Amino acid sequence: MNDTMPEIVLCGGKRTPFGDFGKSLKDITGTDLGIHAARATLGAEGLDASQVDHLVCGNVMPVDQGGYFSSRVIALGAGMSEESSALNVSRACGSGTQAIVSAAQQIITGHSSIALAGGYENASRAPYALTGARWGMKRGAGDIVDTIDYGYRDPFDLSLMGETAENLTDDFGYERTDMDEYALVSQQRADAAIKSGFLEEQIAPIDVPAGRGETRCFDVDEFPRRSTTMESLAGLRPAFRTGGRVTAGNSSGLTDGAAFVIVAERSAATEAGLTPRARIVDWEVVGVPPRIMGCGPVPAIARLLERRKLTVRDIGYYEINEAFAVVNLHAERELGIDRNDCNLYGGGISIGHPPGATGVRMSLTAMRHMEMTGHETAIVSMCLGAGQGMALMLELLG
Image (tube, rainbow, N blue to C red; front, side, top):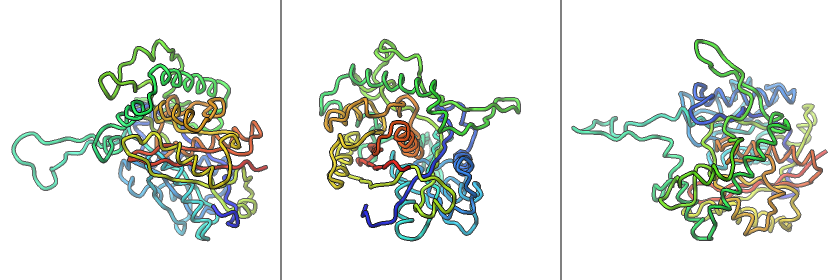
């Protein structure tokens, strides 16, 4: 990003707790999850919704009536005016990050001054499709397709995304034990972040159905397997390939949730009474071979650092999405990123990975980490299904 452009800042955000597949959030529409996170973000920052002129929503799997119009439904549901504008974006697993970038681009070009950026997924509500039914089906059995597969299969050879992780494992010689060890660290870090209250700071509790017309307060991420051991991980069968090394334990969790953050031009943020917390420095998106899409963070981070004339060690903290443990092992090996500088509060393997919300969760985590430690810069990065990588650089303010 050109340094003569307006300063674009993040001012704070909130997310729902992430729900395990088919569990606590399955009865709440995706847009209602987004409305909850957007309202909580505004409330936490004391910002009136009428002051927000744009909302960008990242989403991979539209579900429920209104899902294709998610950004507008969430904007009006959060209290924004009918004169405000809204945009849906999808960049696979980087959709939440793309929402932040797209909001920044709107501000840079003068089309917005204060925006909400975020996203949601509710895979638990993804429907089955009766293909062929619209124009008439012939005698015999018809195909029923799980629409989750539209998002979790490679569009070129229709293999599951886990197969691409197996390909990366094979091509670069990563071992099952190392992947399981990484997964255990992720679970341990998420457990510590829950116990310390670090993750609680991001979460806006939400009432969910409890049966018989009752509700309960859902306020803690549901996916972490906090009693995980190396022995329990070793006992899991390969999930995608006979004799493979990728398991449910060293892969990200299929989870539901929403997250939003305020993106604003710095002077507009100050005038609105907001506290800028981090500056968006720059971002990068690259293409990689789809069959090893998990390598994506490596060239994305490398190109971003090269353009900024920085080295890996110039960055104080990294959040790299744990789509699969091999993704993070690859970034560690190829870039020389120290595990003690990356994903210190858990990640996709432990907390879960709803693509529309993940990048926002990671950005909130990176901002808070910088504030706690004084690290001046952070990079949020992820691989993207169909073969891309994305990286976003943030700088601490205040």
